[in-house]
Image (cartoon, rainbow, N blue to C red; front, side):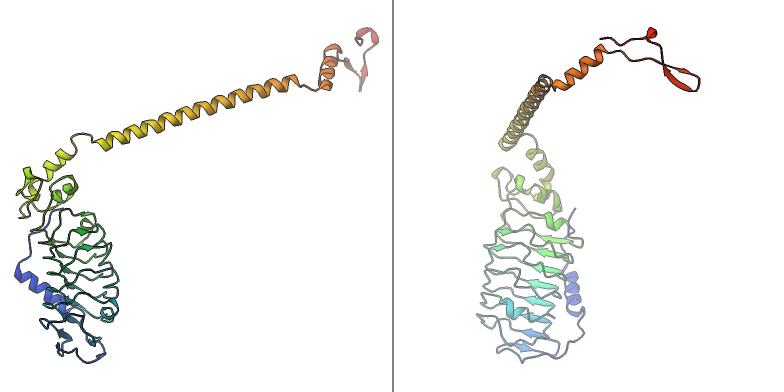
Length: 324
């Protein structure tokens, strides 16, 4: 799979506009006022940007469609408060002090289509953190200097995802198994990370667009080269010979086969010996009555009969006799 070029500013604006208008038939006026230091309008937009907030705003209107809390000092997104906003479509949390998010953070935001977590202090993304965001179209997660690990299944359930941007983080490796399976994904931003162009990133190098500007930060002999140009080179380098683990695997398999063959041969030999002893013992312990009957059959000849007329009569004694 080859990634499409980065979307233009106009296409991004169109996507955001679509996000804001999709399914925005007003919900019942389930409002609880407007948080202090925030601005709420009739379009169900709550604007709290740049208000020096240190905690997530309370008393948000429950029918809020767009929430902007960027440029504050918020350290946590409380799942209980956030998940009351089930009609939320647009959430901008950029430029805060968020350190951690989990799968429960967005557990009830099935309509959310745009999420911005850029310019925070995230360090890792756990398994299916965004699993409940079935309508997510655009996810921006750039400029988190400590973000060094993204779980392979972090985006496994985001089947509607079209744009993913993880630029300018501290990533060195990215498992793309779940990204390849996303049917609508068309753009991924990867630049500005510390990519290690080794065998762990072989699939990533084969997957990214060859004209992209994402470059390697290591190893030294590949530093500065584009990831898209190294895919085939890494494939030949990573599969040209067997490593120590391969040899250990073959050694273990050989030992298992040898042990299984030895045990099988021993078991068959034991069975054959036992069977032979059983037959021999059976022949030695033959019933004495059977021996007498066998001797009688050997020393007694059958009485001959012939048919004379309508009945069967024994032959005269001159034609046969019983041997004593």
